[in-house]
Amino acid sequence: MNLTDAAIRDNHHRHRFEMETDGKLSIVVYQNVDDETLALTHTEVDPSLEGKGVGSHLVEGVLAYAEQHNLKIVPLCPFVAAYLKRHPDWNRVVSTAYNTSDF
Image 1: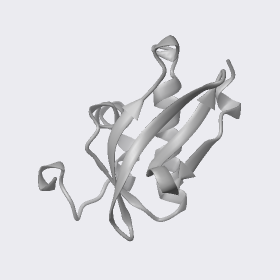
Image 2: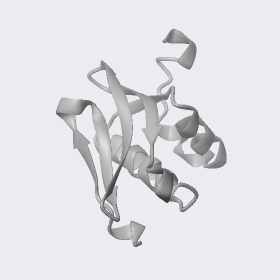
Image 3: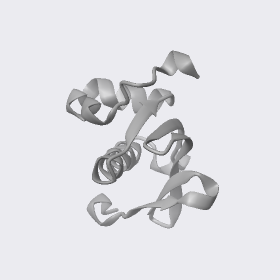
Image 4: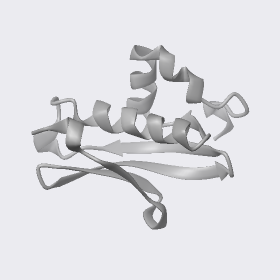
């Protein structure tokens, strides 16, 4: 399993980011809050891949995507919130206009 080659893509139609690892799909579901903000609501990794860093790699890719596209995120998903606590440097992409309590 090589996570560095795993590409994260935005599936606009399903409102989720997707990453394929060993033929299994991992996702981060989002809602558009406004033109510049995504609320990340749910992260899902295949049970056979749990504990292997897949979720963290996916979330980091989503945060990088947000930064590259000048988007802000609202971390409604507990996994994303936990990731941000462990990697506070990514708080630069967290929205200051919205709070998790707004949802």
